[in-house]
Image (cartoon, rainbow, N blue to C red; front, side, top):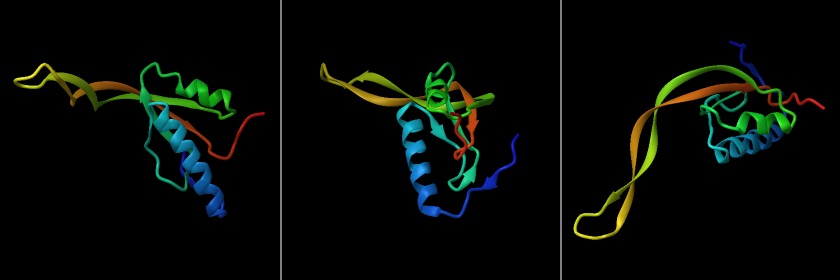
Length: 109
C-alpha cells in the first residue's frame, strides 16, 4: 500500500482539486475513501465501473489496489399498502467494489 503524504501548502488549490475530483468520482458512482489533504486519492467503485478508465483518459495515473465486499444501499421499488403506487426504499446488499488510487497532483501528458 502506498504511503500517504501531505499535499503542498497551497490549501486553496488543494481544496479546488479535491472538490473537483470528489465531485467527478461521486457523480461517476464512486466513493472517495481517503481523507482530504492526503495523497494519493483512494476511491471505491462498483466492480466493472468505467470511472477509472474515464479518469485515466483525463490524464490521471489510476492504479487498481484491490477489491473488497461491503454492504451498499440498493434502491428497491415496493408497493404502498392500500394503493397502486410504489415507493422507493434502500435495501442493503453485499456488493463487490474495486479500490483504486491516483496521485492528485501528477497527470500524464
